[in-house]
Image (cartoon, rainbow, N blue to C red; front, side, top):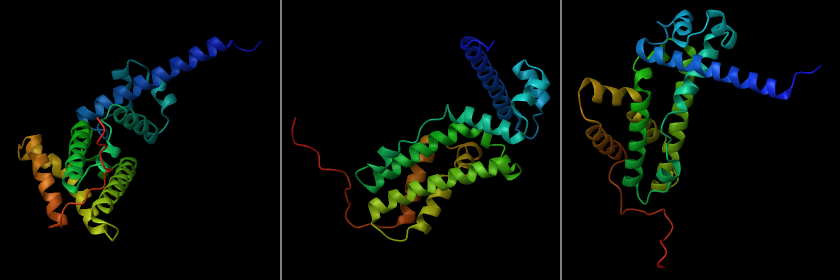
Length: 210
């Protein structure tokens, strides 16, 4: 006799909840002490499950890190891509981009501060993907406001300035406030571009209708 659909669905839901609980426990420990110093036994105790249960859900470190990063990323602020690209001028677009980068860096700080992407290949690959996405957004922004051309050098400089390490050093090592860091970053990014002719608007004309 085949299992009843209700029982099968309930089991799948419970397994998903258990998997999420383990991922959340791992993410919390990784924020506190880093992934390298966290054992599966630590995670099992934190999640209130047995060690074999952890291994059954996450057979490899990549499986576990993938679930952890997904758990953390699901709670991260979203980059307002349309607002960034739809800004009326380069300064406004830069300010929106800096605001988004600041929010993301603050959210991921407890995990990125360990800088384990330098020793864990999975995290290094995740970082490469994030940098590529950020660079692509920057390149599109620059093309919209500077016109077609080779903006690779500027895009590379912007991506570097917006990355976690400069933000973390200014906020946590130099003790600057986040608003101050945002102001400084906007000025630095625009300085990389250099003086520009009269502002170019890339937004649609606003309707004069009430």
